[in-house]
Structure formats: structure tokens, C-alpha cells
Image (tube, rainbow over all chains, first blue to last red; front, side, top):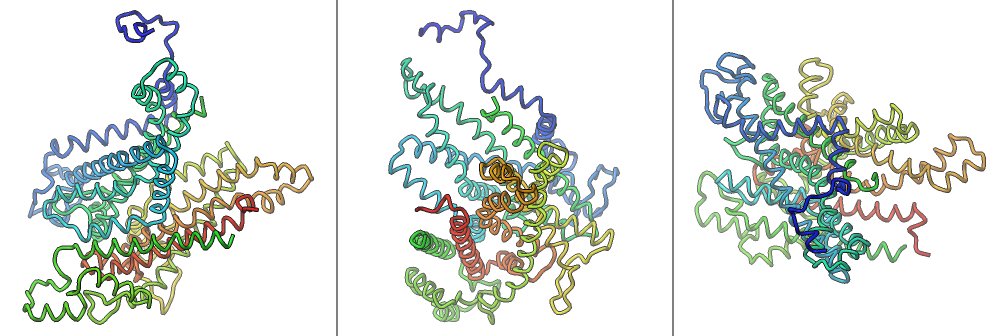
Length: 302
Length: 309
């Protein structure tokens, strides 16, 4: 038994090679054109955010005093124009995309960590601990948390823009974990009683093996879907903060802070259109991808 | 039912107290006092100001004073507008915000509900796919992006609608169209999705099969029997939706220059006018908690299954 499981060198007979949940999911995802397109768009956006600010000819904080608020032009490669301070808008949009995506992913990671731990602990232990932990979640649900982030951001201001950024995603992440906790708890409870877990236990699997080999992959599906759909929500929350002047501070930019500046300069519409288009494409791609993932991973469809 | 209402109400009180206390403590942890200005005030004057506003007391005492004031409907003075109380500022903005929020909600319910019902009745046909595409796209059309773009397109380029302002003395619907539509877009998306799902579920239920078996006309089956069941999830969505409308109205009021609570809140946040921020947060928290409670209780009134015998 054990050498059958552990001996990697033994040739696996093709005939009994099973299709894992993930193989199935990938196959279904690839059959969904909207999701595939979104996947490519997200990949391009991530690459642009990661390498764009480094590769682009203009730095994001360089000021061209003789070229203030010029329309998009090929001269000197200001392809998206410049802003009212004479900074290249393409560079600032790339940086804005980077920061927005970074906040989205980092805050989701924070929310995921808290939510998964909270939900898993409540689900595993059960009983009054579960009851208490979930009542706390219920109570917090009733609280309009975006206001708390606002209060926190008004009160705490670091001079260091990077520290400020860390504060933003910690603050947003710390309030977005509630749904995650509920999902994970529900999954954990339903899985704990499933036959295949019983079977694994009967076959002599240790609790650690059960958690990582049998429970984790099954919880992972909804978690991945939630995380994907949560990133746009957080990007919006950050944009909202930047929009009201409490988010990313100059000279850094996020899509929200660029939008906020663009809306005040309607005589220079390119300042609005570049970040707005980037934001729309990002949100659409992430939402369609998340939707596609949900369809692909939904076990009910199998 | 009554016992439940009381229990939920009692549950809401500590939540609200916790919000007040934590927001209050957070505010007071803020570095720098409210009277810090570019020009340094003489020490004695600052001390007298602090004494006047009760800021020299221990924080516990200040919190108690604040809560005492709250009970009498007093949210304290604004820290930046020396002649105004927080309550004045909120009261000034309330009509505009209420008008904007309610029109957006009404639009969302009528359009979103209508789209959702249509999608459910034409399930898996072209209309259904169209509505679902709108629903996904609508979530990605936040006021933050749509507001300024609409302003640019309809206000500046086409010149069809005013770009902002709301003149209450010579009230024009034209001033309300863009802000309300902008605010309602994401709501329409969510309501239509919810409505579609719950309508499909309602049409599958036994009561609808019975109604059809009785030979009722299809229109009556849908509007008289299916719709009330299908409305239930929409009712319980009212609380979170209101929170969304409020957060969205901050942006919409700022973009379209409407003199509502949201605009004042954003200004206060930029000026770090702590008492105003705190006041708006409390009023909105209270509203949301109250609405969640009301929606929850209404759900139980409307849905006989949740009533305990």
C-alpha cells in the first residue's frame, strides 16, 4: 500500500490515470471564451504592471515643465499625453495600475489569511467556539466597514508613502475577511463529514495528510473564486479612498487617484480617459475571470 | 415575533456602542490636536480652547460626555467651521443625499427588478444572456469611473445635461438624471441578478405548480403568486444595498458637486475635521444597522416559513 503511494519511480499505468478536480476545472475554463480572453487580459495587465513602469521611456515622477497638460502625441512618446504638472500620463497610468493591482492582491491575501484561519478553526472545533466565532462575524457584518477604513485612514498618516500603502491594504484586508470566513467554515463542516475523509482516515492517513491532501484541495476552489472576485472589490475600495484623498499619496499614483485628478480637468479629457479605461478593463477582466472560475470549479456541474 | 424584534434590537445596541467607542478612541489617537494650525497658537489660548471643548479631560470622561451628547441628539461642534455644529452640517446635506439615494434605489428596483424578471421568464434565451452580461458589466461600472466619464460625454462633449450642481430653489430634473443613473448602475446589476435567481427558484416551487394546475392565467401566476416569493431576497438585500448607495453617494456628490452629506464628508475627510467625520460615520452606521434590522424583521413578516409557531 505505502510503496504504491510513495514510489515515484514506478511507471503509472495510463489506463488508471484519474482526472483531478483541477484538470477538470482547467478543461472547463478553457472552453469558456470570455474567461480565456479575460485570462489573457489579466496576464497582460499583470505584466504591464510589473514591468511597465521600469521599461517605459519616462519615469512616473519626471516633470516636463515645457509640456504641461499636452494631448496624446507621438512626439517624445507622450502617447497618453501629460498631466497638469507636466508628468507623462502613460508612466503614471502604468504605476497606477501596478499600485492598484498590488493593493488588490495584498489586501486579498490579508483577508484570505484571516478569513481562512477564522473559518477553518470555527469549522474544525465546532461547538460553542464555532457558535461564538460566527456570532462575532454576524455582528461585524452589520457594521459599515468602509467607514472604519475611512476613519482609520484619516487618523493614521505616515509620511513614508510605502508605509502608507501597507496601511491601506492592511486596513482594507482586515475588513474584507468576513465572507471568506463564512465560506471556509461551511466548506470545512460539510467536508469533515464526507465519506472520502472517513475513507482516508480508515486507510491510516494522519490528520495533517487529511487536511492537506483531502480537505484543502476541496476548500481551495471556492477560496480561489472568492479571491479572484474580491480583488476588483478591493481595487474599487482603494480607488474610493484615493478618490476622496485618503489613499495613495503623491507622487505615487493609483487608478483611483488618477481618476480623481482627471475628473477635475475636463478640459484635458485624456487625463480621465486613460485611467478610466484601464480601470474598466481591469475590473471587467477580473470579474469575468472570477465568474468563469466559479463555473469551472463548481462541483455541482460535474 | 415581538420577542425576536426585541432581542435583535438589544443585540444592535452593543454593536452601535462598540462602533462609537472604537471610532472615538481612534480619533483621539490621531497625532496633533484639532487646533493645530499653520500659525502656532499661544500655549495659553490652546489650553483654554481645549478646556472649552472639554478636550483636557481624561479620554474616558470625554467619551462619556460625547455619548451623553449623542443621547440628546448632539454630535458636537465642527472643528473647522467654528460657527456650525456637526448636526447642522448633516441636516443641511440630508435632503440632497436622501433625494439622490432614494431615486437611485427606485431606479435600481424598477429597472433591475424588471430586467431580472424578464431574464427569468426567458431563461437561457437571448434576453437572459443579455441581462446577465449587463449584470456582470454593471458591477464593473462603479460611480468612480462612470460619473466623470458621463460628465465628460453628456455634459461637456454633447452638452445634453448639466455637468453638476443641484439648484433646489428652481429644481430641475436634469440635474438629477446623471447622478442618480450613475449611482444606480451597480445596484441595477446586483438587483437584476438577485431577482433572476429568486424568480427562477420561485417558478420552480410547489405553490406555483399548484397555481398553474388550478388553471390560473400565466400573468396572474407570475405577478400574484411568484413575484411576492421572489421579492424576499431583494428585501434582505436592502441593508447592504443602502450601505453601497451611501458609499457611492460620496463619490457621486463629489463628482457632480451636489451639496449632500457625502460631499461634506469628503471635504471633512480632506480637512481632517474629526467631529464631522465621526458624526457622519455614526449617523450612517446607525441608519445601516437600523435598516438591516428592519429588513430582517420585514423578511420574517413576509415569509411565513421563518415564523416560529
